[in-house]
Image 1 (cartoon, rainbow, N blue to C red):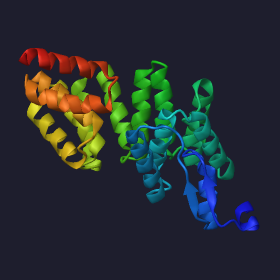
Image 2 (image 1 turned 135 degrees about the vertical axis):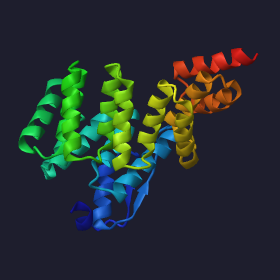
Image 3 (image 1 turned 180 degrees about the horizontal axis):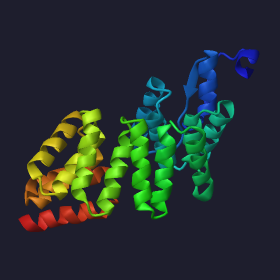
Length: 275
């Protein structure tokens, strides 16, 4: 209303996280000059642009919002993103907004939000998903598994639920159950990149090396810089004593993730094995 009332010709934004002014200008139909002054890594900018593009294309997609929140949190803007989603919730108390605001809370407050979601919106899968995460953090693995299954009953296309359900089966020592869970997800979401990486991970851990290699090659053909796929390919090459390709893919991976100590160990072992 302010932009229209004052008849601005241009809205100038001096930070890449000042999204409210951007939303307002877009609604008012006024051009935006977005001046990014923060010092950020090119990869982080790329991730942020990708997340915002996904939000524009799928404004009602919870996964797109989660990805956007995650990038903002990684960049150190958790307070700002929490304020943004508090405003969204204030404007429209939908289960989606309640979940997305709740996942930015902590401890007992977060648990209470997700319990409210499950009680008020029993058909909304993300309420069970959020509560499963809380129970898992509390060490209640069986309860977390039960809640992730409830989330999938309501939405069999929830890729994150398959991945975390597989993780909790892994924690329980049942890698075969983990693999079965991911494969179940791929029947509903064929070709899903993240699920393919998870399937490759569990196949590698079960020493099913060639199927794992095929999954990772498929992902890297589509997304050559996919970090987890590069990491798992490094692990696969070292597991199978293919040290030259391990060095090639490992050096590419640590250029993206230079603080991954386990990857550096694998890379060093490969150099030692050759030289």
